[in-house]
Image 1 (cartoon, rainbow, N blue to C red):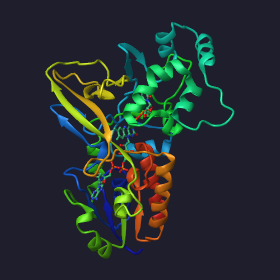
Image 2 (image 1 turned 60 degrees about the horizontal axis):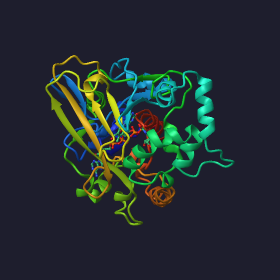
Image 3 (image 1 turned 90 degrees about the horizontal axis):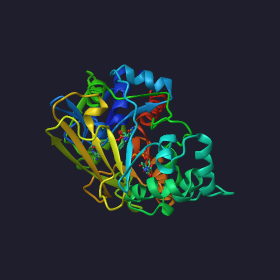
Image 4 (image 1 turned 60 degrees about the vertical axis):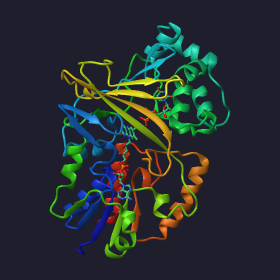
Length: 368
Ligand code: FAD
Ligand code: UDP
């Protein structure tokens, strides 16, 4: 078999899965990463026993047995089930939207009573929803939209709900049972010991060379000339020097605080809905792993618009941006020695299991 020389740009989940699989098949892989650590946005660091999710709460979930089995080879997952709380106008609610939420909101106790309440306020559409507001109103009605969705969503995305794509709200289940599990997936958990060791294991191979603090754009032409193929997981518009204009991304500022108390909020994730509060959520990291330390670490997430120099955490997949992305995608197809992958390379709101799936699909296509 011909041995390829691959360059992987970015040591996030996508790049690391590809690098690992390519190295296992005997190919030479160089991974370059512009940050001073591996793992991209799933990076965790240990602070005196607490694994801190440096770039926001990461809960692994999937219904795909193959993906679940795949990640088990790198770590063991605990039994964590995400059950966030939301604070709106001083009241506490359970998420996702379920009988606990409906009871707190309307005092209803049975699924029939809750369904009746929702039906009274639901927007009936004879066509599919054109934006997030329509989708939310048609799914759960106006009380839940006003109390638990509008403020949070507009803060998170910096745009009115009428200008956001409807699929974003479909991430949240709506249930007529007393079930606070944020996900419907069959498998869920947090890797014991954090996410960074998973990536370190993936990248520890004699055929893989890793260079941190190395930005692709410092030597783009040299890399293009010296490698058989490049797997690029950075921003697709940046690769092409923004020739058609900039895609929009949403960024975040994470403010981490260590507190000398054992338990700050009693739950891993608490969302803040009200628009007057500038952050969207507070994460208390120890609860992801049922920590018993005397101290705690919390993180507040402040959303902001992406500008050059900031981290582009979320693609803003509205119609205009998707159209622009298509132009970049067409351009990328002319470059047969560069493959674009991951959240930024494919400009898609991927969760971790989807990133692994996409990387393994690429491996199947690319490495015969
Ligand atoms: P990234 O992790 O972004 O990796 C790309 C890497 O490329 C980065 O390390 C970057 O520094 C590097 N890079 C970029 N440009 C260059 C360059 N020019 N030169 C060198 N290196 C470069 N998913 C879930 O499944 N569950 C969750 O609970 C969850 N929560 C999330 C919460 C937040 C706040 C965010 C932002 C995301 C969340 N996700 C979650 C999604 C998850 O983070 C992504 O699916 C996953 O990390 C994407 O991996 P990636 O490799 O595509 O991208
Ligand atoms: N959302 C909301 N209220 C909440 C939590 C989420 O309206 O309390 C909406 C919001 O639009 C958000 C989307 O649901 O962008 C998806 O939420 P999720 O928690 O999946 O977002 P992520 O973890 O990717 O930021």
